Length: 118
Image (cartoon, rainbow, N blue to C red; front, side, top):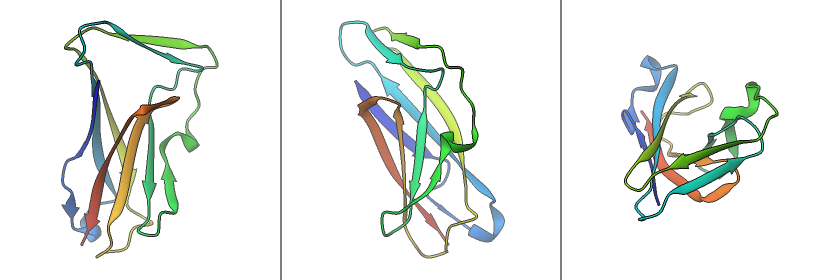
C-alpha cells in the first residue's frame, strides 16, 4: 500500500485564498485485495498542524457520519482517492504548516505534506 497527500499549491498567497485543496490517495501496490473496515461512514480524516505541532483544523469536526460500519475493498493496482479543503483562516504568512491525511483507524495510511502561505 502506498499513501500520498498532495496539494494544488504548496506555496500560496494567503490574502487570495480562503482555503486550499488537498488530494489524498491510497494505492494497493500488493498482489492481494485489501479491505479497510470503518466503524462509521467516515472514510477520511485530515488534520492541519501549526509550526509548533498544535492542531488547528480537524476535517471531521463539523461533519456528521452515519453510525453504520462500512468496508472498502481495493483491488491490486487500484486506489482510493479523496479531495478535501482546508481553511486558511488560522494560518500566518511565512510559517510552515503540516497537513496530514489518513483512513480513520488505519494509521499505516498516514500521509503528510507541507503548506507554506506567503
